Image 1 (cartoon, rainbow, N blue to C red):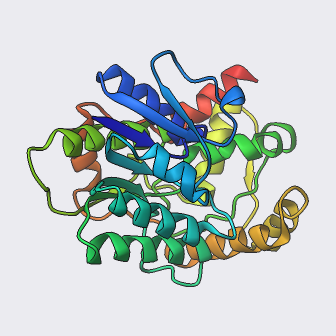
Image 2 (image 1 turned 30 degrees about the horizontal axis):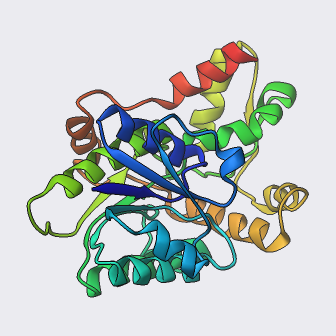
Image 3 (image 1 turned 180 degrees about the horizontal axis):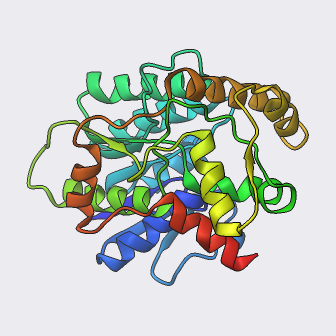
Length: 289
């Protein structure tokens, strides 16, 4: 049977596809523009999106397991609920869903609340699901590297509580392992939730110090006030999205993203290797600069 991967052209999704192929899985991806997708040989490509009912129904034919990842958009909740309804209609109950860390706690952040709603649907409608809850993506730093490298400022207002940033490669590998486990299970497995975190819990000043050491020159933390961050985001994304990013940053400042006891050890056991560290990722950026 086939594993259907949504969000396959994004930072996590591409790695999920690669990890599944390495494990011998039969993979189908759903994408709006197959001509631009450039997937490895052997990957089945279905054209469409998560609001295209006919395309979804077609994409689910012959599928046993779903990886559901949908982007932060104004209709994200509709996309998730429609997709899960079509999956259920097609007899697909095995799902790995990419949610977000503390989805049920940060209720005022739109995409957190959306993912909490999708989690509730998975639970109440009897899906056999693994819910992945990733923390802040280390890979987000690619968006702000110019401010760090060129201006000596770490601009993300992540606060002083601490954030256990996670590498997209680790998210994807855990997702692939869970997809294979669900897909190959002889019967229905219970719902499980996995926090996806990095090995280190870092504050804004901690991160600035790492960059200072790697660059051998001062990098300062831009502070906890999200106003400038929102203004900068609004220069290249819709204002509502920038405001949502501000709300998320305020949550970092007020609560952090702190691993629960045993999270790091659980992930290390699942992967059979250490988690990627923030310092190593930052060093890759410095070497490539």
